[in-house]
Structures are given as structure tokens and as C-alpha cells.
Length: 634
Image 1 (cartoon, rainbow, N blue to C red):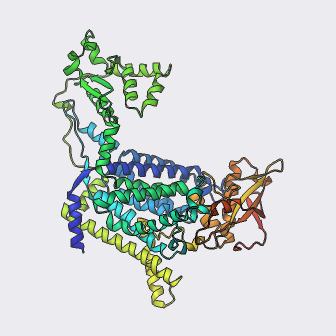
Image 2 (image 1 turned 60 degrees about the horizontal axis):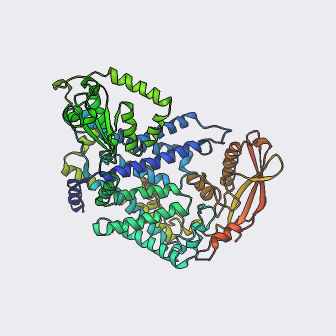
């Protein structure tokens, strides 16, 4: 098996393809990570404080979050990409393993991000849409020669992330779905959006009330997850898998309030987009004719660097650059301008033949590039324009013009360097040895995934719990130990999300209100009168409340902890004095059937609330008084 796998991997390493999709994947993945870290920063007191705003977490956590934002932004734009990828992976490990994120605020998204971050450390994603590519151009270009960095990657860089992060995840999830009654009934995509805690603000009743459509979606999803891994390798199936899979994850984003997971999965489909589609999209974005022709001093190192930078970010190809020494005489608009003045400024002609110089040239360049047009508008504002013009004038007048010879020649391009690249080059070895080591890694991943799938997807489900024999318990303990390591460092985890053992009997939901100074009851900005968890309390905050604090079998310790966090955080955010505010715990019953019912979403939203408890704070201590309520009542 290793030999066959090695041969296939070696072929994947030898076949070179454009890095476009890989660069877009890195950009989108970095943005998903960035928004999640900003989310953590916003909810830092709710997540990390032992008691929000009362007993504060270490301020070092906040500093690390800010540092993590810088790392994720660097990863998105491709600046020091490999170093940013390593730092991003380590930060996911630290925050998931050593903060409350690992237990109360999980929901499966963190493991997905850990596994993806691990793979991204080894992918040459910096070869497209990256600042690193620009750095190479600047480093190895001369006024007489433009260096073009490598822009092709092994096709294996596309196959492996898709196979590991999507294919194995789908297969594991499909195995689990077979044990769930409502999934077997075809209602797997129907039930969660009818439960108030999980539905988004978008009313999807028109689809939820179509039983045939919901059954088709549910069964198609199971078949799709089983077939994705064996079929995506073949080009003829790739577009169909792309369209179906992207539609499913877009549906998750629109219908449920776990949008981070939906976006995280969706970005992988950038790796399935055919290269011809990227080329077609590029041709649609590019102008047929340049909007601005820019003239620059060919012998000026600063001017050449400026042209390289502008050309790198000119996605629409709206700018045409021409050297003054070679083309100035061909344009009558430049006649009559002394040569020293021509070489002192940067000039531009628009499509109407109008001539611009200095700062006005840059303003028209930014406008022609379209996406930086807001910056061009800002530079036109009186006051800002005059300051910017003065700065430009100072730089232009003080730059040193030199005639380039061998002293200003760029160094010869050399292999990628840096601590990570040197370490990789040392241990990866020649192509044949790389193929062997990658094959061993793939086999290891398969074995670790099989351990998780067989243990939790088959044995645990069939036994309805833990093993009873001594031998079975020993194997279970060994499997758990292996899973702990693979779960922590590779993100391999059982994907038993939204199964029957979570929803069955989940017939009650809770909400919190408070009395304002006028004695009127108001809802905390958390669960609204419909029972929906409102924005921005989605993602991991929704998971804390709907998967940990409030479940089908409520644990009072976890419920009290969740109430403490929500009232302390949102009470303080709402400007309440916790010591003089009385909170009310409300409950309403909902239905979570294992088969289709018409208008279930509307039925669950309309159910009445009843008061079941009072919550009071006194000097940083919470008192939760709940009536003797049967939370398991149907």
C-alpha cells in the first residue's frame, strides 16, 4: 500500500499547476480565522473571565489575542506566510488547550481550525496573492530586469487538504448519521432550523414546510458525504461535488447560527474550483484597455520599486507603465516639459489624454485600480490633499537619482530561506524521499481517523455506551489516549454534530429577562422572545448555552455557570448595577420530533414562556433560585 501511495504522491509532486486557488484558499482561511479571533476579543470577558467583569482573567490573554489578530492578518495577506502559519497553529493549540474554550465554548469549530492550521504550515500558499511574492519581486528585481517569483505548485497541495479536511470529515460524519433516527428519515437538514436555539434570523419556512425538498436534501447530504472522498480525485466529478458541497455549506450559513463552521468549510471549495474558472474570472476582472498610462524614470531604483508595488496590486490591469527614457518622445503631452522635470516627477495620461503629475498621478492610479478608490477619494479632501502633496514633494525632491551599474544589481534568486524553510528542506529530502514521508503521514492520518470513526461511530453506537468486558475497556482506554493526542494536535475528532442523542428529549429552552428601574420587564440581548439566540451571540457562545448550559438533561452546575456568565456579561454591557437588578429565568416548551411536521418552526416560536426562577447578584456572588421544574416534560 505504501508503494502505491508513494507512486501516486510522487506523481502529485511532479505535476505543477497554478497556485491561484491555493492563494485564495489561504486568503479566505485567514479571514475566517481573523473574524473568529476578533469575536474572541469582543467576548473576552464572557469567555475567559472566571466571573465576567467581576473576577478578571489575566490581561496577558488580551495581549495574546491582539497578537493573534496580527498573525491572522499576516496569514491572510501572505506576509511571512510560513512563520504566520506556524504562529497561528501554536496559538490555536494554546487557546483551545489552556483556556475555557476547550470545554464550554467548543462546538467542533476549534478542532477543524487546528487541523486546517496544521496543514497550512506545509502548503506553498504564499505563491499567489501574497505580500511574500511582492517581497521577492522587490528583492531580486533590478531597473533593467523584473524578477518573477514561482507561481506554480504541486497539484498535491490541492488534493491533500481537500482529502484530509473535507473527505475524512465527511466520511466520519456520514457514519454517525446512520445511527440517528431523524437523519435516517431524511430530516437531518430539517430539524435543527426548527429549534429556536439553532435557527438563524432568516425565516426558511418556505423550505422547511416542503417535506419532499427536505427529504431530498437530507438523503443527498448523506450520499454526498459518503461519495466525496472516493470521487473528488476525478476531474469529471469535481464540479458537481463543488456545487453540491458549496450549496450545503451556504445553507448552513443561512439557516443556522453556526456561521463560522459554515464559512470554515466553505473556503476549502476554493481548492476544487477548476483552474479555467479562475482564469475566466481573472479575464472578466481585467480591463480590455488600460485606464491610465504611467511614465516613470527607468534608472531610478525608487521609481522601479514603486512600479513593481503598484503592478503587484493592480488586479484589474488598469495601469500601463512606460519608461520615460524610452517612450517620452512618442507623446505630445510630454513635449515642452524639461527633461529634469520629467525625471523629477511621475506622470500619467488617462484615456482622454489628460496629463497628471506627482500626487495627482497616484490619485488617478488608485481610482483606476477600483478597490483602493476610497483612498483616492480621501486624498482629494482639502487639507489631506495638501499635506499628502507636501509629503510627496519632499520624497520626490530628496530621492537620489543614480545610474545603475553592477553595484545596484539585485542578488541572484536563491531557494526559500528562513527557519521553517531550512527545517523543511533538511528533513523533507529529495522528491522521492518526500513522497515516502508524505505517504507515511497520510497512512498515519488514516489510522488516527479510523480510530476515531470506529470507536465512536460504530463501536460506541452499537454498544449504546462503553464497553463492559475487561478487554474492551482496555482497548477503549487505549483508543481514548490516541484520540486525545490526535484531537489536540491534529484536530481529529468525532463529527457527531446535531445527532438524535442531542435533540431527542430537548423539549425546553430557557431565556433571561430583568427588571429595569421603572419595573418593566426587558429581555437581555441574548435570547429573544421568540427563543432565538440573537446576534452576536452565535458560534461558540451559542454552543456554550445550547450545548452545555441548556441540554435535554440539564446539569444544575453547568446551568448556573452559564446563567452567571450571561447575566454578568450582558448585564454589565447593558449598564445594569448587578447588585440592584433582579433577573428572571424563563422557560418554554418546544417540540423536536424525529420526523417531519408542518409549520414546526412557527409553532416553536409561538410557544408561551413561564417564569421558573429568580437570579440575584450580591457583592460578586450569584444566587440562582429555580422552582422544582421537570425540564424533561414533553
